[in-house]
Image (cartoon, rainbow, N blue to C red; front, side):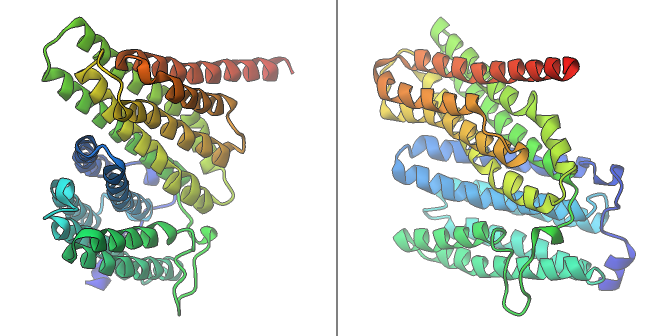
Length: 395
């Protein structure tokens, strides 16, 4: 089996064409639309501190299942059949996880944990076997597999346990999964990896993470559309639905309008793409995705009752989701371009002020103001970009 894997040349080539995002990767992403939808529903039905914490923990598990696969396909060619079979297996496991997700802290803890551990171990087990002729990658994958085995035991133990013990075990497991890259997957007897050991394609990693943002935004539109479709169509619910959709457009605009191509170019030209991939894409996309999910929950609440009382749940989600997204993008821009975005800092501050004074506002009014704040960030980006272009032309 090992010799056959080597003979098939499972690793990608070195050209730009060899590192394009494949149709198999796009197909793979579809299962995460369902998984993210399940997360939104979980948060919506448990809108308290405990529910938010559980949702955040499960989001991290799903994120590591996805982003570890994005790193995996940065090296392994998804068009090769053995790699495709690995991805299909991960898809099946993720679907089972997603089905179990709403009751992951209830009766389906083990049903969530088993497929998650199976996909993590099988993916990196395959990578260890398939890279025996590539000493550098082989050692790196051995280290990752060691960390995933350690966290996997905790995931399984948590699935068997119940109550507070499950939470403690899973928090510890998520911590191991999350801090592994930051510590270079330091493993006794194997040492640790440096970011320069991860010779990745920056363009591929950037595009993969950008596509996950699209997944989250798509889920947001599906959720708001589903909520709107179940209600009587009035001018108020129609207005709330349109504002929710425009809010998704505004978040897309902030991320993709100007930062998209510039971030790809910066990543591709980086002298240490592994460091940038680990920090800007592996870590800093987490708050952006979380922000989109929280925003979708807020949109549901507004559409359901546009002129009702603005409770703490509505206030926290309608304002907190965009603030979390903007904070993540603020840190992302600083990591990639080395600059702090004044417009994003100002927008976060304004959202904080609205949180203090907006409890008496109607939910729809609150949503409209938030939309205007996000749109102002995009407008400032465009204005700043045009000013810099004019300065460069006449400078």
